[in-house]
Image (cartoon, rainbow over all chains, first blue to last red; front, side, top):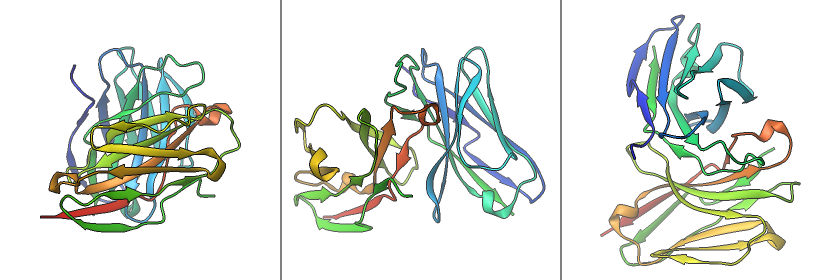
Amino acid sequence: KAGVTQTPRYLIKTRGQQVTLSCSPISGHRSVSWYQQTPGQGLQFLFEYFSETQRNKGNFPGRFSGRQFSNSRSEMNVSTLELGDSALYLCASSLGLAISGLETQYFGPGTRLLVL
Amino acid sequence: AQKVTQAQTEISVVEKEDVTLDCVYETRDTTYYLFWYKQPPSGELVFLIRRNSFDEQNEISGRYSWNFQKSTSSFNFTITASQVVDSAVYFCALSEAGATDSWGKLQFGAGTQVVVTP
Protein backbone atom coordinates (compact mmCIF):
# COMPACT_ATOMS: atom_id res chain seq x y z
CA LYS A 1 0.00 0.00 0.00
CA ALA A 2 1.31 3.42 -0.84
CA GLY A 3 2.02 5.69 2.10
CA VAL A 4 0.86 9.21 2.75
CA THR A 5 1.98 11.59 0.03
CA GLN A 6 2.38 15.33 0.24
CA THR A 7 2.94 17.88 -2.48
CA PRO A 8 4.90 19.94 -3.02
CA ARG A 9 7.89 18.82 -0.99
CA TYR A 10 9.52 22.24 -0.94
CA LEU A 11 8.10 25.69 -1.35
CA ILE A 12 9.47 29.21 -1.20
CA LYS A 13 7.06 32.10 -0.83
CA THR A 14 7.26 35.76 0.14
CA ARG A 15 5.43 37.51 2.93
CA GLY A 16 1.83 38.32 2.15
CA GLN A 17 1.38 35.53 -0.35
CA GLN A 18 -0.82 32.55 0.19
CA VAL A 19 0.01 28.87 -0.18
CA THR A 20 -1.88 25.61 -0.61
CA LEU A 21 -0.45 22.27 0.46
CA SER A 22 -1.85 18.93 -0.54
CA CYS A 23 -2.03 15.58 1.23
CA SER A 24 -3.17 12.21 -0.08
CA PRO A 25 -3.84 9.70 2.70
CA ILE A 26 -3.19 5.99 2.68
CA SER A 27 -5.86 4.21 0.66
CA GLY A 28 -8.84 3.47 2.90
CA HIS A 29 -7.93 6.06 5.50
CA ARG A 30 -10.59 8.66 6.05
CA SER A 31 -9.06 10.87 8.73
CA VAL A 32 -6.37 13.41 7.94
CA SER A 33 -4.55 15.51 10.52
CA TRP A 34 -2.14 18.37 9.88
CA TYR A 35 0.80 19.47 11.99
CA GLN A 36 3.29 22.32 11.91
CA GLN A 37 6.85 21.67 13.01
CA THR A 38 9.23 24.51 13.86
CA PRO A 39 12.47 24.53 15.85
CA GLY A 40 10.97 26.86 18.43
CA GLN A 41 7.50 25.38 18.95
CA GLY A 42 8.06 21.77 18.00
CA LEU A 43 5.22 19.74 16.56
CA GLN A 44 1.87 21.42 16.88
CA PHE A 45 -1.55 20.17 15.82
CA LEU A 46 -3.32 22.30 13.22
CA PHE A 47 -6.58 20.49 12.44
CA GLU A 48 -8.19 17.17 11.68
CA TYR A 49 -10.66 16.25 8.96
CA PHE A 50 -12.92 13.27 8.62
CA SER A 51 -15.50 12.68 5.95
CA GLU A 52 -15.04 16.22 4.58
CA THR A 53 -15.71 17.76 8.00
CA GLN A 54 -13.28 19.50 10.29
CA ARG A 55 -13.66 17.75 13.63
CA ASN A 56 -10.93 19.44 15.57
CA LYS A 57 -8.76 22.51 15.34
CA GLY A 58 -5.61 23.55 17.10
CA ASN A 59 -4.68 26.97 18.38
CA PHE A 60 -3.73 28.69 15.14
CA PRO A 61 -5.02 31.92 13.62
CA GLY A 62 -7.74 31.94 11.01
CA ARG A 63 -5.13 32.39 8.28
CA PHE A 64 -4.69 28.64 8.52
CA SER A 65 -7.52 26.70 6.95
CA GLY A 66 -8.10 23.37 5.34
CA ARG A 67 -10.54 21.16 3.62
CA GLN A 68 -11.07 17.54 2.74
CA PHE A 69 -12.48 16.12 -0.44
CA SER A 70 -14.78 13.16 -0.95
CA ASN A 71 -11.79 10.94 -1.80
CA SER A 72 -10.26 11.87 1.60
CA ARG A 73 -7.50 13.94 0.04
CA SER A 74 -6.91 17.09 2.02
CA GLU A 75 -5.51 20.53 1.43
CA MET A 76 -4.40 23.17 3.82
CA ASN A 77 -4.14 26.83 2.98
CA VAL A 78 -2.21 29.60 4.65
CA SER A 79 -3.13 33.12 3.62
CA THR A 80 -1.13 36.30 4.13
CA LEU A 81 2.06 34.45 4.88
CA GLU A 82 4.32 35.66 7.68
CA LEU A 83 7.99 34.89 8.26
CA GLY A 84 7.01 32.79 11.26
CA ASP A 85 5.02 30.44 9.03
CA SER A 86 8.28 28.95 7.77
CA ALA A 87 8.07 25.37 8.91
CA LEU A 88 7.75 21.73 8.01
CA TYR A 89 4.08 20.93 7.49
CA LEU A 90 3.22 17.31 8.08
CA CYS A 91 0.02 15.52 7.38
CA ALA A 92 -0.98 12.19 8.82
CA SER A 93 -3.75 9.77 8.04
CA SER A 94 -5.61 7.16 10.03
CA LEU A 95 -8.55 4.88 9.40
CA GLY A 96 -11.01 7.12 11.19
CA LEU A 97 -13.02 4.17 12.48
CA ALA A 98 -12.35 4.30 16.21
CA ILE A 99 -15.27 5.70 18.18
CA SER A 100 -12.81 6.92 20.79
CA GLY A 101 -10.77 8.70 18.18
CA LEU A 102 -7.72 6.75 19.26
CA GLU A 103 -5.85 5.45 16.25
CA THR A 104 -2.33 5.26 14.94
CA GLN A 105 -1.48 8.11 12.60
CA TYR A 106 0.86 7.54 9.67
CA PHE A 107 2.77 10.53 8.43
CA GLY A 108 3.78 11.81 5.05
CA PRO A 109 7.22 13.22 4.17
CA GLY A 110 6.11 16.78 4.81
CA THR A 111 6.25 20.04 2.90
CA ARG A 112 9.06 22.43 3.81
CA LEU A 113 7.80 25.98 3.48
CA LEU A 114 10.18 28.90 3.54
CA VAL A 115 8.71 32.38 3.75
CA LEU A 116 11.04 35.22 2.71
CA ALA B 1 0.77 23.16 29.72
CA GLN B 2 3.17 20.65 28.25
CA LYS B 3 1.51 17.27 28.40
CA VAL B 4 4.46 15.24 27.15
CA THR B 5 7.94 15.85 28.48
CA GLN B 6 11.12 14.49 27.02
CA ALA B 7 13.82 15.83 29.27
CA GLN B 8 16.73 14.51 27.23
CA THR B 9 17.63 16.87 24.41
CA GLU B 10 20.38 14.76 22.90
CA ILE B 11 21.94 11.39 23.56
CA SER B 12 25.19 10.30 21.95
CA VAL B 13 26.29 6.70 21.98
CA VAL B 14 28.75 4.46 20.24
CA GLU B 15 27.37 1.74 18.01
CA LYS B 16 26.16 -1.39 19.85
CA GLU B 17 25.44 0.50 23.05
CA ASP B 18 21.87 0.53 24.36
CA VAL B 19 19.90 3.79 24.33
CA THR B 20 16.99 4.56 26.65
CA LEU B 21 14.73 7.50 25.93
CA ASP B 22 12.61 8.93 28.71
CA CYS B 23 9.05 10.20 28.34
CA VAL B 24 6.74 11.53 31.04
CA TYR B 25 3.16 12.40 30.21
CA GLU B 26 0.24 14.11 31.87
CA THR B 27 -3.43 13.37 31.32
CA ARG B 28 -6.67 13.19 33.26
CA ASP B 29 -8.18 10.73 30.83
CA THR B 30 -8.32 7.09 31.79
CA THR B 31 -8.27 6.03 28.14
CA TYR B 32 -5.37 7.15 26.01
CA TYR B 33 -2.66 5.95 23.67
CA LEU B 34 1.05 6.59 23.85
CA PHE B 35 3.32 6.46 20.84
CA TRP B 36 6.94 6.64 19.83
CA TYR B 37 7.84 8.07 16.44
CA LYS B 38 11.23 8.38 14.75
CA GLN B 39 12.15 11.33 12.56
CA PRO B 40 15.25 10.80 10.40
CA PRO B 41 16.87 13.78 8.66
CA SER B 42 14.50 13.34 5.71
CA GLY B 43 11.73 14.69 7.93
CA GLU B 44 9.07 12.01 7.76
CA LEU B 45 7.74 10.80 11.10
CA VAL B 46 7.94 7.03 11.24
CA PHE B 47 5.60 5.18 13.60
CA LEU B 48 7.45 2.79 15.91
CA ILE B 49 5.20 1.61 18.73
CA ARG B 50 1.84 2.24 20.38
CA ARG B 51 0.59 1.41 23.84
CA ASN B 52 -2.91 1.87 25.23
CA SER B 53 -3.57 2.98 28.78
CA PHE B 54 -5.04 -0.34 29.82
CA ASP B 55 -2.07 -2.45 28.90
CA GLU B 56 1.00 -1.98 31.04
CA GLN B 57 2.68 -5.11 29.80
CA ASN B 58 6.12 -4.26 28.59
CA GLU B 59 7.22 -5.78 25.33
CA ILE B 60 10.13 -6.24 23.05
CA SER B 61 9.97 -5.93 19.30
CA GLY B 62 13.25 -6.67 17.64
CA ARG B 63 15.77 -4.19 19.00
CA TYR B 64 13.03 -1.99 20.46
CA SER B 65 11.52 -2.38 23.91
CA TRP B 66 9.39 -0.13 26.07
CA ASN B 67 8.54 0.32 29.70
CA PHE B 68 5.10 1.76 30.44
CA GLN B 69 4.36 2.65 34.05
CA LYS B 70 1.09 4.39 34.82
CA SER B 71 2.07 4.91 38.44
CA THR B 72 4.82 7.28 37.37
CA SER B 73 3.21 8.40 34.07
CA SER B 74 6.26 7.26 32.18
CA PHE B 75 6.66 5.58 28.81
CA ASN B 76 10.32 4.91 28.22
CA PHE B 77 11.77 3.47 25.05
CA THR B 78 14.96 1.48 24.60
CA ILE B 79 16.97 0.68 21.51
CA THR B 80 19.21 -2.31 22.10
CA ALA B 81 22.54 -2.65 20.35
CA SER B 82 22.22 0.69 18.58
CA GLN B 83 23.22 1.13 14.94
CA VAL B 84 24.23 4.19 12.95
CA VAL B 85 20.88 4.02 11.14
CA ASP B 86 19.16 4.64 14.47
CA SER B 87 20.45 8.21 14.42
CA ALA B 88 17.33 10.38 14.36
CA VAL B 89 15.04 12.46 16.52
CA TYR B 90 12.64 10.38 18.57
CA PHE B 91 9.28 11.74 19.65
CA CYS B 92 6.95 10.52 22.35
CA ALA B 93 3.29 11.40 21.74
CA LEU B 94 -0.01 11.22 23.59
CA SER B 95 -3.49 10.77 22.16
CA GLU B 96 -6.43 11.22 24.51
CA ALA B 97 -9.94 9.85 24.15
CA GLY B 98 -11.62 12.60 26.11
CA ALA B 99 -13.55 15.49 24.66
CA THR B 100 -14.01 16.22 20.98
CA ASP B 101 -11.04 18.56 21.07
CA SER B 102 -8.90 15.44 21.24
CA TRP B 103 -10.03 14.04 17.89
CA GLY B 104 -7.15 13.28 15.59
CA LYS B 105 -4.75 15.18 17.82
CA LEU B 106 -1.35 13.91 18.84
CA GLN B 107 0.47 15.86 21.49
CA PHE B 108 4.20 15.54 21.08
CA GLY B 109 7.16 15.96 23.35
CA ALA B 110 10.06 18.13 22.26
CA GLY B 111 11.96 15.15 20.93
CA THR B 112 15.32 13.57 21.75
CA GLN B 113 18.14 13.63 19.22
CA VAL B 114 19.95 10.30 19.15
CA VAL B 115 23.41 10.26 17.63
CA VAL B 116 25.02 6.88 17.06
CA THR B 117 28.66 6.94 16.02
CA PRO B 118 30.56 3.98 14.57
